[in-house]
View 1 (tube, rainbow, N blue to C red):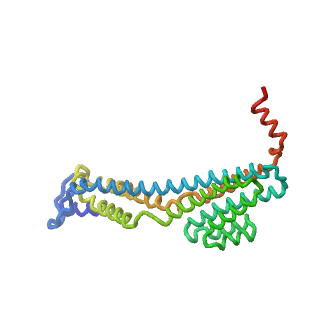
View 2: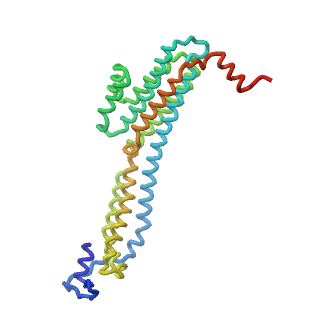
View 3: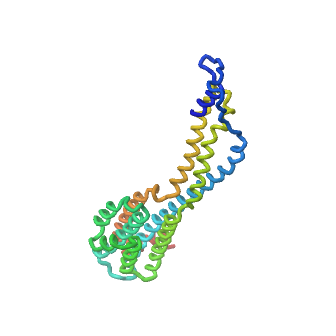
Length: 303
C-alpha cells in the first residue's frame, strides 16, 4: 500500500474519473527494482523451503512411526503375557493371574504415559501426569516412577520385573522381553529427535532470505501491474504470496517439533484401553485340555 501511494505521488496517478494526473512531488524518485534478481533467486529460495519442509516432515513422520511401534508392541506384549500365562502344567490361581496380568497392563501404560511426559515441554502436563499415575498405580509404584530421574526407564524396569514374575517358560519370557528392547529403541529415537532440532543457522537463514525476498518483491512487481488502476492489484497479489510462502515456513516450524503436535495423550489412552481389554481375556476356560481338543478337531477333523 505504501509503495502504491508513494509512487502515485512521485510519478503520477489516475483519478477515479480515469484522468491521468501528474506527480504531486516532482523531485521524489520512483521506487522500483528490476525483476531479474528475483527471477534468479527464486530457485534458491524454493530449494531452501523444500529442504526445510522435507526435513521437518521427516522428523514428524519418524516420531509418528515410533509411537506406532509403541502401540503395536504394547498390544503384542500383553497378548503374549495373557495367552502364555500358566502354561507348561503350572497350576493357575485365577486371582493371582488376574493381578499379575493387571500389573503388566498398568505398567505398560505407565511406560508410554511416562514417555509422553518425558517428551513434552517441562511444565506442560506435570500435574495431570502425577494425578494419572497416582490414580492408576499403587502409591509405592507411583512414587518410584514419579521420583525417578528418568521416568520412562523406571517404568520400563518395573514392567520388566512384572514380566519376570509371570509363571511361564523362560523362552516365552524372552520373546516378551524383545518388545521391551523395541520400547528402548523408540524412546531413544524420540530423545534423539527432541535433542537434535534442525540447525538454528539454517532456520534463521531461510527465514531471513524469505523475509528479505518478500520485503523487496513489491518494488520489482510494480511495473508488471501497470495494467491495473494505479497498480493497485499488486497489493492483494503480494499479500497472497506472503501468506502462502510464510505459511510454508510456519508449517515447517511446527513440524520440526513433532511431539508438540502429535496426539500423544490420545495414544496413551488408546494403549491403556487396549492393554486392559487384552488382559481381561484371562482364563475363560480357553486353556482347558478338552476345549483345545475340541478346537483341534473342528480345525482338522480326523480322516
